[in-house]
Image (cartoon, rainbow, N blue to C red; front, side):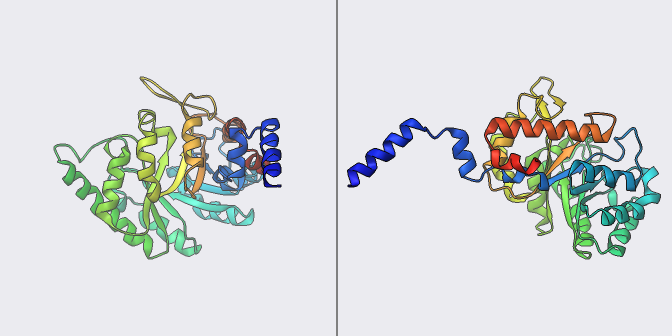
Length: 302
């Protein structure tokens, strides 16, 4: 009887071979790329239609995106409260708030204003911050001195964030600060539970080949991950998702890892119209998910 069952099982496998895609689906990989886990990013300054907070929230509802990372410029400051109210009205989660860019955010004139805004609306979110692509202020320093100088500032930012229940995300944006190894060194210096890393494909053009090596080390510290299309160089180039030669492999690595954070969809350089740009990148992601055999995840886009 046992031999008979083994023969039947062997026969079934011969007739219906288990391909790689089926294995991926059965293992539940790729769920992190579900539509409900996508975050719209770079859609405020990078939008030639200059949508109002209400129009922006309506656009996200139309696209089926329920999470939003807020980037802003000086012209948007007066409408901070309107933005939050529009998100609440349309049940869109504020996943992150962009902090003043550059080496000294604590002394930026809007720093206290942002904290007051989040406290006023009882919002606990991620505060994304980048030292920037310039190494100004870090010249002639040793590696240890750089980590200490930036780490002290990050610690102060994190202490302020903890008072209102927020998390700080170190955002790679080229330069010394944009290297994953340096971000991890800063985390080791700071040693605070409410500080993590936001990794961005759109600033990873020169890191593609190293990604399989450093990603496992980065993984325990990742609180958010933003995708883009990437073409290898030199020089490397950012393109829409699905139009590069590197992002599919990177997405597969992420999907097969234990990463459980959000996935940001970026419009920064995709299209002048934020809605069109988001749609292009979401469609590109869907094509990659189909190529990888993540059919269960694809059903969340129906």
